[in-house]
Length: 108
Image 1 (cartoon, rainbow, N blue to C red):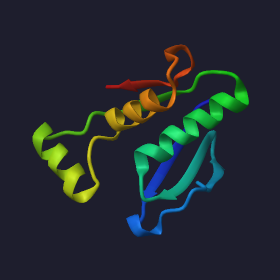
Image 2 (tube, rainbow, N blue to C red):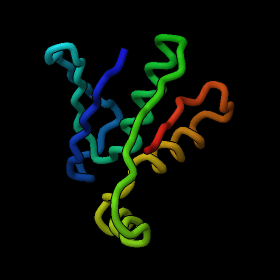
Image 3 (cartoon, helix red, strand yellow):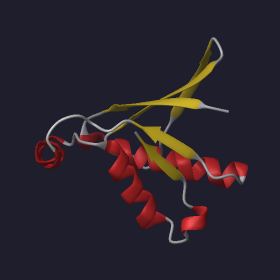
Image 4 (tube, rainbow, N blue to C red):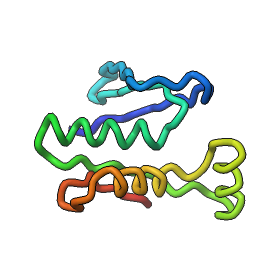
């Protein structure tokens, strides 16, 4: 069952430990909405939560961010913006040692 997730980046000083996610159904699509100062960590946390509660590995699909990779890195360092897919993958890699239980990240 596909789910669509939108994470709105909030002020980094509003950090909290609980990620609240709201959802709705629009036509045949299930949409999830969250607000967080750290988008990649929020996506990774949801993927881990889904695997723990369903017993199935989650798959997340991303699109590569266009532009110069160096500019993307600088944007991430100074503005907190950047290519989310590799960041989510790295968070998952550090959080889950066993690759067999790690959610799968697809990028196209």
